[in-house]
Image (tube, rainbow, N blue to C red; front, side, top):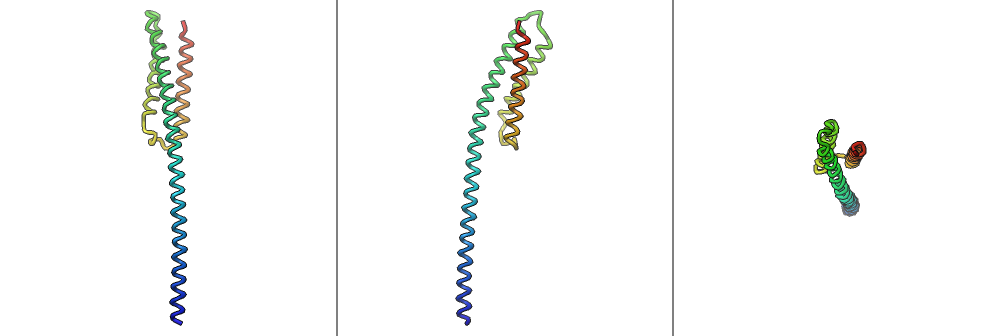
Length: 140
């Protein structure tokens, strides 16, 4: 009887360890799949970030050209220069530089990429509209 108990104990123990090994292998496989999904998501976000940053820098440079054009018009106005307009141009240039700085910050500092992108695009759109409006109002 003791031989049968030992044999059944050994069989149960080996079955248990096989089941444990299967569970462990399944867990490792699941972890590897999760890591792969995370890596793929990070790579896609990195590509999206690079494209977003490139497009934003182009827009910032276009804004800077518009600002310089507005400044030149103001300088050529001589005695008719508008101090309020000059202040508005200066504020727009400051905002453009703020956006450039935000873009240069490490994206990892922003916890929510989608929120950062939405807010940045909103600020960029507002700046563009302000530049366009100022340019229209300043056509002489």
